[in-house]
Image (tube, rainbow, N blue to C red; front, side, top):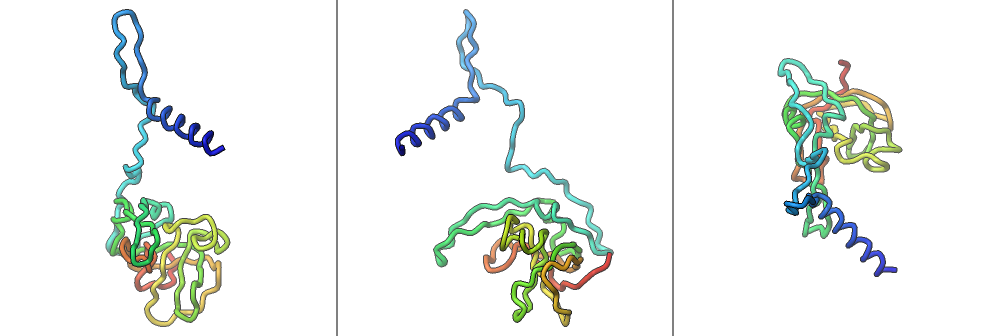
Length: 183
């Protein structure tokens, strides 16, 4: 069984590797020619445009805008584990350090530590429990007193957007000075 799987996988890899080449066959010329693909897929090119950012008022940022990020798995030796390191696209970088607001579902991660996140998805589908990725949550860093939030309250928060690509113990998106906001 394992032999058949390895043989099949080798055939698939060979077929993919050779799929771009064709042979032009006519009587005068049998030179192999690289086939032109119908669509060029470039996974490294960002598809977003850099948004217009206003400095005089909070800017709305959407979950779709926050998905302008790619992740690469890196190994952290001291933890003997792999983590996703983000590379933020220009659409997200334009908002770094700016006051923004975003609407989502509140998820109380730890009431005692005052640790809340706002999520694109409700608790059942969020990054911690379901199908969301790390780009679908933002850490809410409150300053001062605030009320106790319940799971899945749909609210809008504003704060300064901080991008985190290096500290594996923090979220990739952080709202510093977070507070409830009504646009």
